[in-house]
Length: 390
Image 1 (cartoon, rainbow, N blue to C red):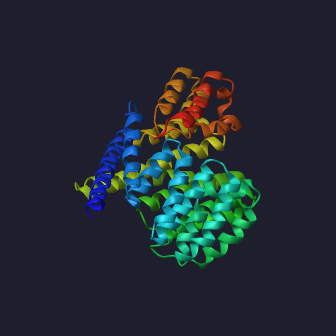
Image 2 (tube, one colour):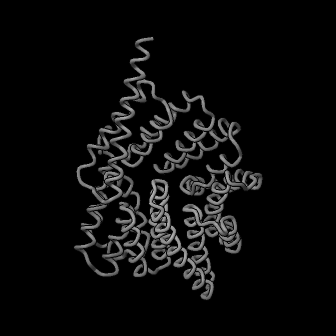
Image 3 (tube, rainbow, N blue to C red):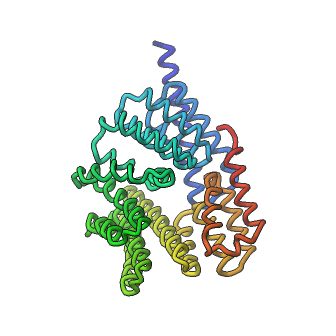
């Protein structure tokens, strides 16, 4: 009894230390304080892993450690952690969520066959114990869906997910899962050339959140408008392109107004909600910039990248911003400075995966010819493998 009590106390102490270090470090990173944090992240991981090994096999430890290891590129460790958690957790939803992120992590590794194999397995073994809308979440993840697509199994993905989508009753609990599934389905239908069906999916998301100005609602509506803008461009409908882009800009201002409104409340809850608006505004600006790049309008993307970075530091955003600075302005010095800043963020371990996006997109033509720029990118790939054992 005494030994067990001592172990529990020690595990709790390790957990508290790890979570405190991690929270402080991520807060500093989000504010652009990028130097000297790699050791702090390693310290947080060590505390959390010790807590887990000492018996604190609980959500706060598992999900914090999972996110930290994902951010710093320790993807095999993420998979091992989550597979163990599936075995020891007595919570059906926690086990299913762990299975989801095993698949998602294989997807990040671009291990397509393993991702699809585990997706099928966990849906069969763990899925029946959770509600249909929870199962739909696993098909709402576009990174996971891409594994099915690249491995030539997208028809199976559709045959498994569409009946599930149709079975889910939309309510406050399920709405977000339904909306994200529709967002992923929009992209599939676009790739299939079924543009009118893609438009219907995007418009359905707008209907789901009509009149809702919560952070998630505004982000999803904004991304749906971006998708519609891209679809109308593909169809050559200039009038609808202009309309949807105007609505995108209006919604961005609505998001900023909502952020300021909740800050004015002056209480802790208001500030927490303001952080969600700010984070989603950063993600939205990043999405707009990407849409502009991929639609051949890189010069228009710069303002949105800069706005995204003013809301929140993000190495992926800064990475692409650096490429656009070189392409549009020919400002090699500023581009390399931004690229090195992105690479100095301990969470940039997956940045190197985006080199392919650079090389495939004509908006980065001058980057393709610059060996120093790409050398910094490739350095990220080495760092991803050798960042150290946390």
